[in-house]
Picture (cartoon, rainbow, N blue to C red):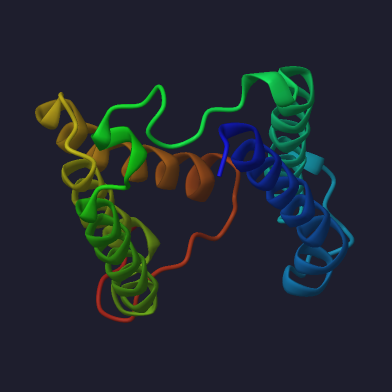
Length: 169
């Protein structure tokens, strides 16, 4: 499969995912009270922003693939090294580990809360992708959820999901 066909597939999937989120996922999956004065604090706002960005990136990929034209296609083995022509077996393992991390994260949120579940999940993903800055990743994994909790719970007045066993002030 050529790189142009891959780009078309990825761009098309991104645009379709964005459309699904806008018309089905967000309206039927997220409930929002009608009395929210500040749009930024609405539970619908940020998912819609992310869905829009996914759609824009998908359109950008489609435009890039259309501009590349059929003349720039590369088939496996011609201009690629053997490592590039075949996918690495470690990629599937990393995908499986990422899936496990996400499932454990989602299962942990009701028990220990969003903040405390996010810290080990962030650290696990940082080491899964083999970051070049592990100390920075660990510090960010601890500080970012706590600072976001402090802002949303105490400044914005938005309830952050707390766990059954651990509660933040």
